[in-house]
Image (cartoon, rainbow, N blue to C red; front, side, top):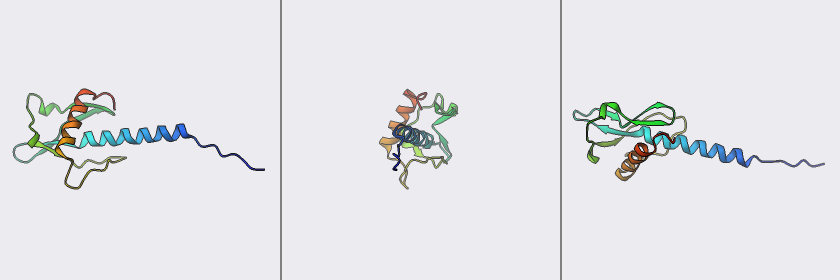
Length: 105
C-alpha cells in the first residue's frame, strides 16, 4: 500500500508572502538620514509592527537625497542589502512607499 503525500501549497505561499513582507519591513527600517555632525537617524519609526510613520525628529525638516543613507538594523528575516548600502533610487522609492502605504506592511 502506498500513501499519497499531500503538500500544503497554500501554506507555502502564505509563508513566502510573510517572508517577503518582513524583508520589505527590514528595508524600510534600513532607510536613514545622516544629520549634520554625522549622526544617523532612521527615516521611519514603526510604532506598531507593520505600521510605518516618518520619524518625529525629522518633522518640519526637508531631507535631501544627499542626506539619505542605509542603516544596519537587525531583522528576523533580513533583506539582501549591498555592502555599500542601498542605491539612491531604492532609498527614495522606499520613502515614497513608506509615506504613501505605511499601514500596509
